[in-house]
Length: 116
Image (cartoon, rainbow, N blue to C red):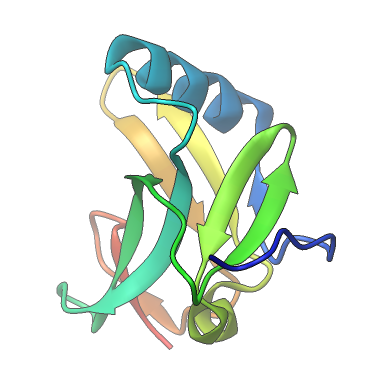
């Protein structure tokens, strides 16, 4: 496994996102051995889709501590995600995670995919 890192995280999680993630971890009985994986994958209506979910650490991962949440990210994904903010929206018409990515040239209407 990769060693823990102490470098600054390339992304930001808002306080409401952290609370939502802790709630999800508790409701779904996700073990503490799992951290939050953040990344991108090809696909979606704009070219790339965001990945966000709990997972075990892999050898290639960079590991960050963001407000007490262990976050895993492949180094190659940081190119697309550096400076991004993840928020939790709990509104009447929209509920879920919101990705504010300064590297995105275009985003789709759902906010879950982008082009860089």
